Length: 544
Image (cartoon, rainbow, N blue to C red; front, top):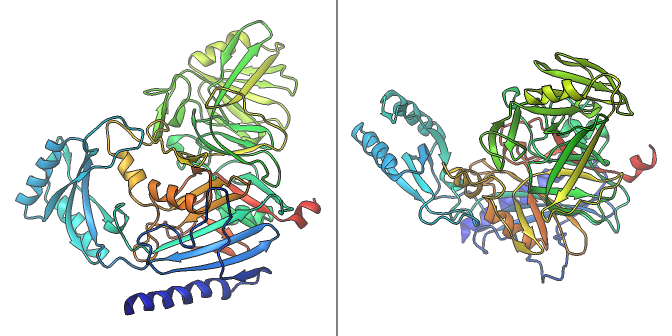
């Protein structure tokens, strides 16, 4: 009991210091919980993370009318947690047994653990897989030394030399005391007079940029990270949103079909929706021929997270997996940046009316301020050669469809960020991780991504129209435990949310408040992202 009192005092001091030291923002602060009251019942006065008796401290700020920031510090360092070395997580039990036996013969303290939890929409039964681990250590450095010992043992299984990575047991997904560090942004469109916007990284749309930089550049009051995106050129175009992106009615990136998205239809966020969305895009020549367009504003042939058209090896969503397609047509707009991707293939330049101005047997060059560029590779290049000759006109049709196949209603203010999986729909859990590509049949990816705790960013809405955006720090032993899918669902339900979607997380999860970066990015510094959700103050909006 005495230890809990000490932790309550320490957490309270730390939380208050966060909002007093170095803060020059003009906003009100109190210690009450800014939670919406909804028809779903009373909102809990604590987050449903860990045991109900865990200490929790909240600080609430009111940086603008209709906008609250609730910072929650809950729990304390898990005294039972430890560092360990995970050698491998495999589907096959015999392989796990073989690894464990060989490690033990080498004098290493190896053990095999069964991974029992499957995705809610996974019809298979039995264990998801098996994990081989070595040692239990109080210090991370000791676990790192064990990684080196495993490598020095030169154990080879199925043609691969065993190594390992350091993991913290408090992030495994089981019972823990935390601690948790969570920030909850609440926007009430009925009161808010500013704007909730989506902004691409960098001024010209090319590359990636930290949320802090985007907030400073745009003059935003608050910002968080948003969509999944390409992090390295070998997977496409760095900074490119890996999924559906729309800004002010302009389609920026095609969907990873039938995956969760956060939809803003009005400038202040009124009428926000969370839906599974898909895109259908095609090009029609004035000579009567038509063809599918595979993507927008990305490197032809590389599709991170799959879920497109004629992708190899799979058309369905597959998160963090790179699909390919050697026969594509991609179109580029000024939102991509100053120059289109260079490379082998065919490039067609169109004016603002769709008239073909030029056709070149190579890709790359300046994207016009008005008009677009079409690029083709393989059969896509062949179609352009035949049907995009100079003087012809090309018309591009594009649709954004909901899960029931109906067109999404789009206006000049519609903006969309992509994510997945959906967490809640109409107040009910709908974590269909398999359908949205977070459960790979050949591996234990679902455990690693959805059962283990990570930093998370979540978007949600309440039945009465409030918008709730949550950023939870994680992967920081003793500081912030992070969340898994189940905890995300329960947390959002406790906030009165009826519809919610998981956005990009991990090192990307970032919350920038009126006084700058809040919390602790798990990479040790802010990770540049592909886009951001921004709260734009009313004064700036009126001064445009």
